[in-house]
Image (tube, rainbow, N blue to C red; front, side, top):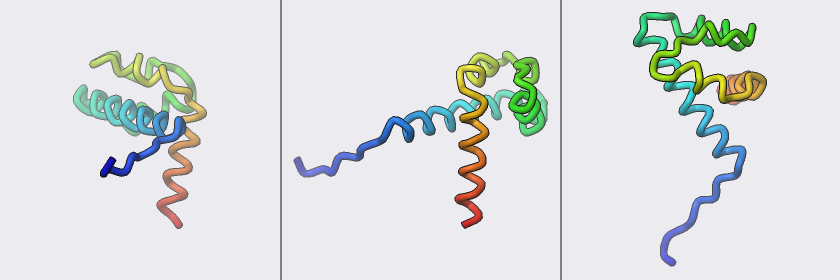
Length: 83
């Protein structure tokens, strides 16, 4: 075995999936002409999936994630960028 294996923890895998879904939802909203930031924030604050278009299955994708985990990941990302 000449190659080093990379181990991803369950948390990293979940984070990677969350990132992928958020980017896909953002792009779908943008394509439909919405302000993706405002729409996603509206969803995260209220929990109302009506803020997210069903275009490209965006609504189903984002509702498959836990809103609190999304907020936690966003805050952690922001704080790491500040340090």
